Length: 396
Image 1: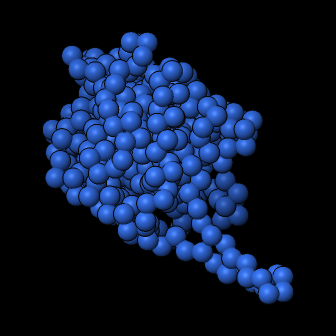
Image 2: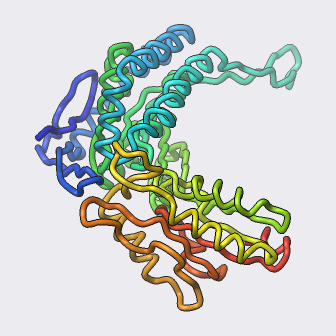
């Protein structure tokens, strides 16, 4: 059984404590690997490595940083199948969807930021004092502590490390405790083209993330996660006035008006809502429909849900399992608490007895103050409400 190690200062390393976290394949529900559980000493070593590397990397020319990122993108493209295999085993996503929907944008984004590395322009700020020229100059800020989620592990890691490196910063990145696999390989591939210490990965849990935020070295903290996690990070970072970037949860609405093509709307919303098992902060899972089309839309989206295919990664399906047992319990609990005035039209239960599969679900007749409307489900659950007029739809 393998172990996903930290990658610090150009080297793979176990947690100094020797502690590990079990890594489970969500398609089977079985443990298949372990991951380092980093503690304070690991974080300190990683931060010092990134801090030591900052002076050299921040003074690299834009062309040097750009070229390094272009080489990383090329190497990832060459080793894409390795990344796909790790991502699929770690998330349970359909293999073909990872290959077609995640790898190309991941590589393209690195190339985009490689181009952006050459465009960090200053701006004239006017003549505020006689015979003196004022201007704004963009400079790297230092070490960036970054925490990524489990819904798009390798894609979210790319969104964080690539712009930071392009701007001349160094990075200590922590993947989710359930999905470290692809990120550790990403760091190893990138290290071939970067000075030691520029891009570091530490595996671990919430305590590991907290230690990163509280550490003295980082000048900026970036997290993609829940609203609760974002609040905790912002509070902790405020103590030392760190810059903070938060990408948190959402509750994406779709408004269906009277003149909509109901069949087309239902088909499109089903794909946008159930893609990645609804584990997306922009998943189209909250539908607000006009009175004249409400009944027809509810029927149409229910039929779409019944026909949506789920299954193992090697099958021709739209989505696979929920990522972990905690998320399975969260989604199940929210659906079980559906109020009596609402209708559970299809789904609403675990699918099969292996892994963390959950049925495509539709719940109608919900009210604006219901938990399922106010709280992000992050699962394959589409809710439908009826609005009285367009002003109400906008308020909701």
